[in-house]
Amino acid sequence: MSLDKSRDLYNKARTLLPGGVSSPVRAIKPYPFYTESANGSKIKDIDGNEYIDYCLAYGPNILGHANPSIKQAIINQLEKGWLYGTPTDLEVNLAEKIAALYPSIDMLRFVSTGTEATMSALRAARGFTGKNKFIKIEGGFHGAHDAVLVKAGSGATTLGKPDSLGIPEDFTKHTLQTPFNDIEALTQLIEKNQDDMAAVIMEPVMGNIGPVLPEGDYLKDVRKVTEENDVVLIFDEVITGFRLAMGGAQEYFGVTPDMTTLGKIVGGGMPIGVFGGKKEIIEMIAPSGSVYQAGTFSGSPASVAAGLAVLDVLEKEEVHKKLNATGDMMRSRLSEIVSDLNLDYNVVGISSMFKIFFGDKPLNYQDVLKCDKEGYVQFFFKMLDSGVFIPPSQFETNFISTAHSEDDIEKTLTAYEANLK
Ligand SMILES: Cc1ncc(COP(=O)(O)O)c(C=O)c1O
Image 1 (cartoon, protein in one colour):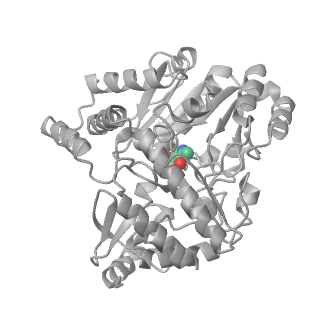
Image 2 (cartoon, protein in one colour; image 1 turned 180 degrees about the vertical axis):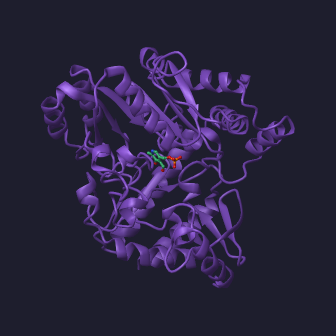
């Protein structure tokens, strides 16, 4: 497999872009492949290599790349102009759909990224409660804004830098941390800081260090303790929204938070973020309230048109049943392979998310850090050589799309077996 053109482009790119990339997780060492195009389940690099893609842009492309229905919706919108700076019927229609699917969302605001969504959600929760502190889960990733870049998952953990320089301690002194799946620790932290505790923000399934799944009644217990202590519970469903079910993890697990953040899938692959929640909280947002939030690109017509198109397909074709069944099959076949090869590895996942952990099944961030992440990177390169693109990190989730055929899945399983061997 030749990657000569990618290598040459990378040498130029790293003189212009830090690390040669536009987002850290893409910086595969010694150099990443540069993409020429992508269609369906496949992504093609500029050297002409083609890979079955389980990265899928880190989650958004649940219908695969360049889905025809979404493409047409974007083209139709482009014909009419793609940025107005005025309200549109599109945003009202998408808001209505989202609110109908997420019982936690009475009202919402569109923003441009998941980062903006969690940043604004936390501001709203603080504005609403008049309190300053919030709790995040160790290893949780909520984008790259100051308050949440503490023990952050995703690229931050992959690079071994879960905290960031350039953030004054004053900006994170209100950010408290607790391990996932430990209700006692969370309860104690809330009770100890009750006077100034505004919110708990969490990924209901930890997608940026795994996936790591909630055990037993953990999410229900989180809901109970936050409710009892008047703490706003925010589910960050940027990954799990429209992935686990139309109504996200909150539908899947039957737990309703006070606020929800969405992104990725809900823009059909175009830039988007959403934060929403109870009417009394979201009405605090400007101009109806005094929590300020604004954006030139918020509710961008092309993104919202793509969002309406993807939700249409997901709903009409009842996609989740089939996708979740494919996920079950993938996990059970991978588990057989791991067990036949007598490896001390674990297959984890839920719905159309999966991963092999090079170590014990993790329950939280500390467990995840014990896995063989260097071994995983070697495995990643072998898979790439076999024509399968999985995320280049032990800490990022693999995603399946509706575009993955049976043949893709069989080829992938064959590659897993050969390369694990
Ligand atoms: C759970 C979660 N929240 C927030 C974000 C940030 O979203 P964005 O990259 O669109 O800013 C991500 C990104 O991966 C995420 O996984």
